[in-house]
Image (tube, rainbow, N blue to C red; front, top):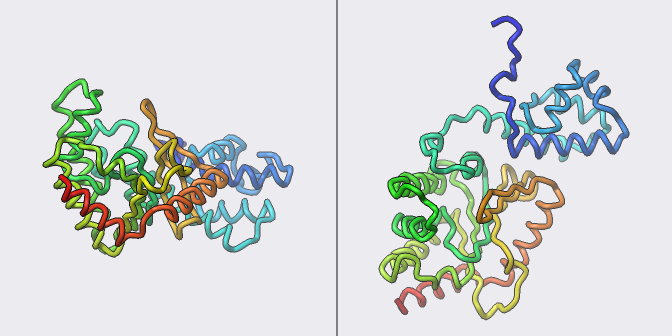
Length: 293
């Protein structure tokens, strides 16, 4: 159709788009430039620049380079990071993945879609086993215990979607997963003893995979900086280069998208990893809990 914008159907705010747009906005403001200056450099409208900075539309590599040049950003590492982020965002927008079959995912859809293109995850879990490491019965018991499902028939598709996510731990380019889990999450009898025996056995099995690292934060660690909330750091390149932070609350999903937030949570995760047991000791502790059951 004549006059149709190439961005038609893609004008939607995405986590990665906002991450990139925020960085470009910060660079522009650091140079005391207006959106009209960026629009001129891109031969585009001011409205288009505004959409880019709000993460509403994808951005092409030549435009990323043009804006970096305009703003005086010539650090190759920084420019390459932005190019990688732009590419990841374009891939996310084009994706028509299996997760779209599961409307019950709700606010988790964006997280699952990003997990599918991520290179690594670092997750801290205070109360539950991470989703990528759960058994079907454990997931089912969590859903039942949650009590928020209006239709019990929706629980099984939710369990199926969580199991489908675990395919990312295999394949030619498996996701790198580093999980630090509190000991309390392993002792909580989710679904009863038999369910937990299977779940703990599964953890010891999956810990043997070269792309999975599991650490337990023991009770004996005492007070630690992760006592207030769980979170996951999602990386799309080398860890630390393109990170966003995901947090779940009782009523919503929260994304922390700035460099400052990402850096703070990376430091927080590293500190908790140092406080946790190493992997071999963690597996022994898991095995000990399993024997107790």
